[in-house]
Image (cartoon, rainbow, N blue to C red; front, side, top):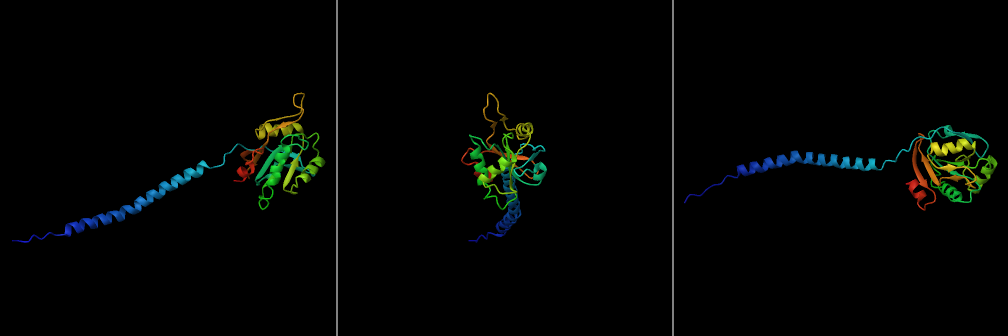
Length: 206
């Protein structure tokens, strides 16, 4: 009886080829996977980009210290704005309180606060300075601006795209938006946040 000898060389050679193929393909597969993950991550980040609502037009008013203050003073700064008036019986106290509450978490930043009065006839610099004191507004950090009524309302309506209406026979009190506006260092509007909602500050600071 003759013993049959089976050579293992072809099998060994095939295993060697498979191993080489795996070594070649593995980095390619990993690389492709990394590229796909990077693509997914970029898409996710892009979907989270802050929207751009347009630029704030130039403006020049007077602050609570009686000094000229305008958009040029905010160049290169992030700032948060609102529209209020000191004798407002409605939402203004809440809006101003929200602004005041943001001073502490942002105290080590260069974020500036701006409050435009929609009642400039009554809100003189002296009155606004008193109002600022009630809110513990940080000097040089939070400016309360007054000026020609037509310019302020034009800025609200056409600059910030926010509704506003002066006193009239139909409106015994000025009407204005309750939103706080986030503006970036380039003067671009980046967000609107309703100050009357409980999570307004959380959303704005997120």
